[in-house]
Image (cartoon, rainbow, N blue to C red; front, side, top):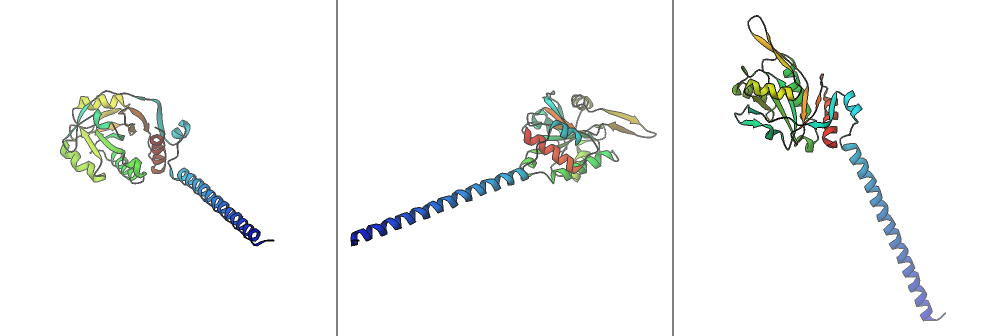
Length: 228
């Protein structure tokens, strides 16, 4: 074999080896990318809020309407003395509860539960969520009274009061019943304990029935937000 033949054969061998090495590197890169994609999909599956069926929602105490309901505008005042209307319910999800500051049990329990809920929500959902208490006892629940009561549970919560007729009309549209009950030397108010869900379009999206459980409330709320 001539010197030139030896050189050519050696060059061919080096080229073949380099080709094999490139092929191995390419295969490794493809495998790493594939594994990273699979792991990413698994991570996304396990960290993303689960989307429930209508049946699963109901089993867990949540009811989502097939078609969200439009309701009329209203004019109330928040606990900071600012006007509050339907426009303030748009561009965010709203968890709305109707209660009153003199309520001995259901109202403080619900407010505390909603405070616990927001502390467990995924960050993106939390940033798009507001909690609103509408007073069904506006005669006693003044702006100042709500300003003392609502921030006790959470500084970001909103309390609303105003004319009785405005509150009654809003409650009726959201299927919330309440009734004044006279006692010996005072009165109380019987009211629905449902938590109303209003979507970012300002439409009545559904509701959560008591008793409220944090795990079920979080599961169903995040499901409806994710599926919207």
